[in-house]
Image (cartoon, rainbow, N blue to C red):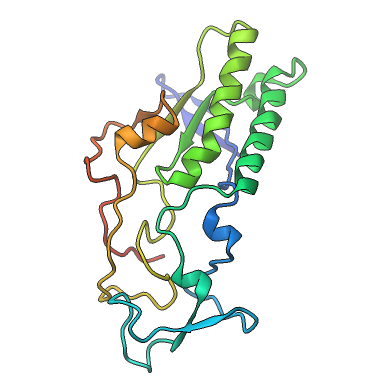
Length: 212
């Protein structure tokens, strides 16, 4: 995707953006499809929601009485599956070829990475930043490619325990705050934060966000 962005001299220049979805996560692997508008798969094993915790309103008029096992076992902030880790490496190899292709115009070559703080996106980005900077050293490119993160970049709804389906603001979900800065830098040592301090308890502030 190309955008025209302002420069320091108030001129406009064209910039190329590659938008990447994270690789397959553990939730994706177990088919934990718990979108707000998802329909239950009758072929999946069903589990009663009654007594499953304080994250569901017990009013049968508002919620379904059944949840799939995958939804019950959904991880708040999953890492990648084995397939996901392989996908991340293949993606990194592709962009490595893009960066070292001498026939590729510079405007198409990645110069900066930006990722969310979710575990699955950090693990997707790790092999990418490693391979790109290997190319930078090999081609003697003066500046290494930096990778940034920002707590405002995240999946709608953020991090929470329990299924997304039929979730409402009044539900008392158990909050999982995600990774803190130390944990994130264990995954990507050179990760840079966008002028914000990450609480020791984790980056996610909690609360329910709407899609509006």
